[in-house]
Amino acid sequence: MNRRSFTMAGAALLAAGAATPYASMAQSPSPRRIDVHNHLIPPPYLAAGRPQITAGSDTDPTPVLNWNPAHAIEEMDRTGVAVAMLSMSTPGLSMLGGTRDATRKLARACNEYAASLLRDFPGRFGNFAAMPLPDVEGSLAEAVYALDVLKADGIGILTSYNDKYPGDAAFRPLFAELNRRRAIVFVHPTSPQCCATVLPGIASSLDEFMFDVTRAITSMLFGGTFAMFPEVRFIFTHAGGTMTPISARINAFGARHHEYDAANPHGVYYELKKLHYDIANSTNPSAMAALMNLVPTSQILFGSDTPYVPIAATATGFDKMTLADDVRFAINRGNALQLFPRLAG
Image 1 (cartoon, rainbow, N blue to C red):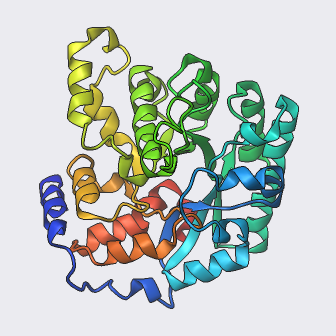
Image 2: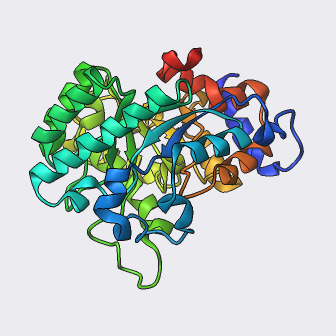
């Protein structure tokens, strides 16, 4: 499907709701999806911060606090997911580990646990290794260990750490190493230090997570991260958060401020269109149309955000959308296979 027809598909899905040949995939006995946004709750992580793990969410904490791999696979099978790429959610390890050394040990314990799941349940899981950021030195060591020894599929980071965003120069040594390795980096939202409690009684996951995705992308654009480290394959969540509807404003800012020309030598849109985006909890007409009109088919991935949000919340909405078969296959599975060719078997 060419870019024009795909963009038209973005508008066409506004009429979603009719049954498709894939409408029964959510109950498929032969799962095919690859879920790039699927969280694990390692026992060391739960032990370190049980009260904090669900503090920023307004969803039922029971599936999170009782997570285990057998239950995860049961949900995957019910919703047509063949492989779940596991990652850590928020709060970040540094918020639970305490000291620098304790945070490093917690990251190692969580990554060792994730690696054990890949061994114990062959073919069902992948893993984005957790980092002890904002400790860059510790994260460099953990990234090397995770990728070389544990054979992680990529690295997982958060959208912000205290008052720093990933575009900050402090993070460049880590991205330089990941660029050398052509690593995949999964970027998950968190509650920003500035605004987590700005609306009393409103969970920060409702809106601040989406805004923090946008802040992270903006910081990396104008910090030069994307252009400086072009071999890193980044995945951002929730259809880009609030970035897609304001992408024209971000582009216009870059066009007005020539001091950022070196950070984006090919332009803002060039960088935004080469990033990858999952559709976790975003399979509604407005979010999907905005994403599909900004980026090509190849950059969109299936993701769910389970156990914080059930896989079915995304899968059912996606299966009801009116899409060409090749687009549906690409988002469900094909695009992930380009990033993770080992999953083809």
